[in-house]
Amino acid sequence: MDTANESKVTPEEMEKINVGIREMVQFGESKNGVLAGANLAILYNVAGKVISFASPLQAVLSVVALLFFATSTLILFFSIYPKLKFSKSVNPLFFGSVNQMAQADYVKL
Image 1 (cartoon, rainbow, N blue to C red):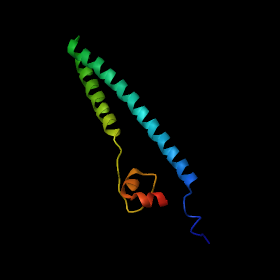
Image 2: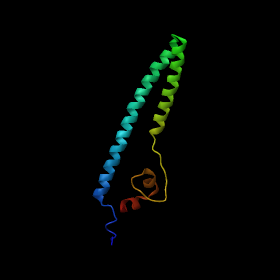
Image 3: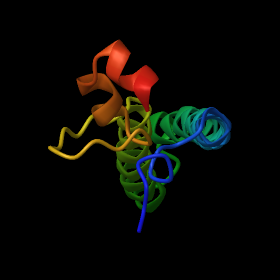
Image 4: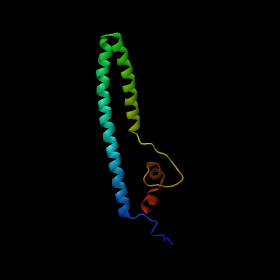
């Protein structure tokens, strides 16, 4: 039979969870920053090609590439902001659950 103490998360376990979350967020933000920089550099170069209009085919391909990279850049900028999903169950791994909790309840975890 499980006791009440076995179902509680210890402070050491919470610290491990917190470290894991920080590493995941840091990796994701770094990846988004690199991809955004690469996309913006490509957009700059493709926009320069569109302005030159060397041939009609190159201009059309440059405009298509410009649209794809612009869409990709918008998606990257949108993905930087965290998505808070609220649910009835409490899970301290998700921002939405932590946001719903009072400070005293979070400390009791």
